[in-house]
Image (cartoon, rainbow, N blue to C red; front, side, top):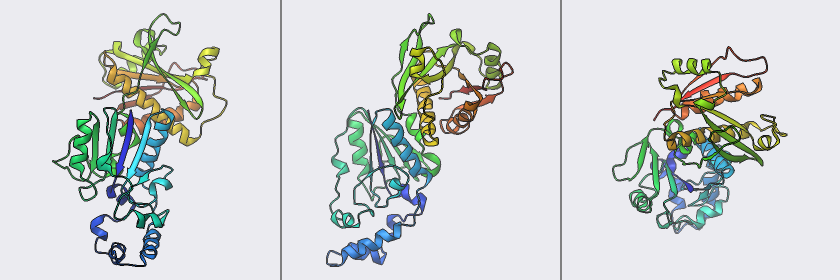
Length: 352
C-alpha cells in the first residue's frame, strides 16, 4: 500500500500564499519567466524572500501528521507538491518539490521550465491511494492522471474548492482547512486485523503497531467477553440510541510487552510526547475504522475504559477531536461503578 499526496496552490493559499491568477502578471513573475533575463538568479532569491514570512496552516500540519503516522505503520508515503514554498517543511513534514523550493532558490531556476518530476508519467498500482490537495488543471493534467490511477486499480480522492466533472474518483468540495485532515486519510486506509485466543477461550481480534520503538497491541472484544460493566454498556447504548448491544465491541490497547509479562496496562518506560500521543490517537481510530469496515457483524457501538485517571485526558481528546473528524457519534459517560484508581467510560457509535 502506498499513500500519495499531490498538492497544489490550494494547499498553501490557506496560509496566504498567492495562487497562479494572483501572480501571473506580477513583475517578479514575469521577470522570472523571461528567458532573456540574465539576472534570473537574483529574481529567484527575491521570490524566495517573499515566502519567508508565511506560516504553515492546519492543512500543512495534517500532511505532516499523515507522514508521521504512515512512518509508524510502515506504510509507503510520498508527497509531491507543485508549490515552491517551504510550508510543509516548516510543519515538520517533507515533500518533493516538482518546480523547486525556496529553500534552494537556484532550484527554482533549474526546474522553472522542466519539472524534476513528471507526475503524468508516474507508475501507479492497485494499492495506491492518492489524495489531490488543491490542485487545478492549470497545474496538472488532472483528468489524465486520475484516469491512469483508476485504470491501475488505485483510488483517488480530490479536495478542492470546486467540483470538476472531468475527474475520476471521489471529490470533496470546500476549503482544505475544513475538509482535509489526517483522520480523513486514515479512514480510507484498510489496515490488517488478526484473530487469536489470548487465553480467554474465545477469538479476539487484534492488531499490532509501534510508536517510536514501543510496540502496542489494540484488541477488539465482543460483547460476550467484554470486561465493561453491563450497566455501563446499557447506559451508553441508551444515550447513543443503540438498539442491539450484542454487536458492541470493547476496545483496549496496551504495550505489547505487558501481555507477554502478564503485567497488563503497566506504563511504558518512556512517556510519549504530545506529538507522539497525537500519532497514537490517530492510529487507534484508524484501526477502529478498519475493524468497523471489515467486520461481518457491523458493530453497533464501541466502548472503552481508561485504566487509570491520567489516561482520561487522552481519551477525551480522542473522543472530542478525532471522533468528530472521523464522523463518529461519541459520548463521554461518567462511570458510577469506577473505583478510585480507575478511569472513565467512553462510548463511540460508528456511522457509515
